Length: 277
Image 1 (tube, rainbow, N blue to C red):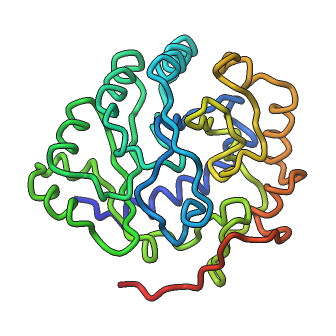
Image 2 (tube, rainbow, N blue to C red):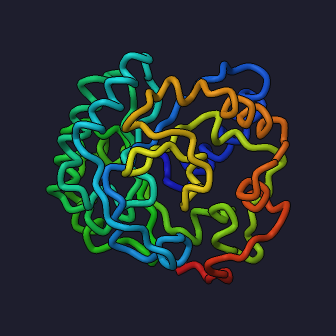
Image 3 (tube, helix red, strand yellow):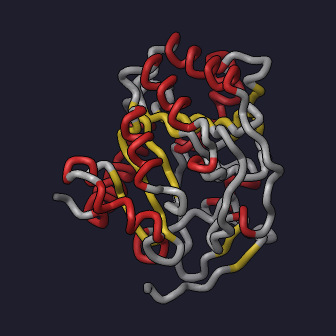
């Protein structure tokens, strides 16, 4: 069985290859999408802007969620679908049913759930596995949660391979500063180019299409899926131009320049390195 640390190291190597592939070979098409169903989070992790600037509580309607999935089906989407942004997805009691909608309408997509693990009980894990979740990525702030300790023994060896579990300190060596909102002295992530907007679509609980997973405050809003079609938003000339510019290493927007370390912005929090537990 591959260890979680080895699996995450492999993911990092794959990500390193994605930039040249996106720049020179791959078509201008996203292969990941995050659709946040619930903006709430039960934690205030020190490495997340939720800890210092919590957003209003809001749930995406089932009607809008289903419409987005239907549009993805029309686009023959077969990549990674994640029901999250900064909200904790397991807070949404509708999640197994929503995952079922994705599995039915997007049979070739992979459903990946990111979680802090607090609510990952044996019953909830079973419901989500049965609904069609292909992979769970669980990040602990302060070691394995009690819920995970109760859940892990109930899983078969094959099912355990569908859970990548890590602690933040030892598992995330170069965290994103979330557009300059959170500082990590000594662990800054610097990039010469960026493929995030070219590879992933991010939709918040209100149906707004954000620049990327690091655009917590919605500084760059590309569209509103309550009144626009996803394919039309993706095809906007200014969005296409920005994706190409970022792939070339041209960072024009302040949030992008702060994210890759080219300039500093007033941060919400500064977090010194912590000793691994």
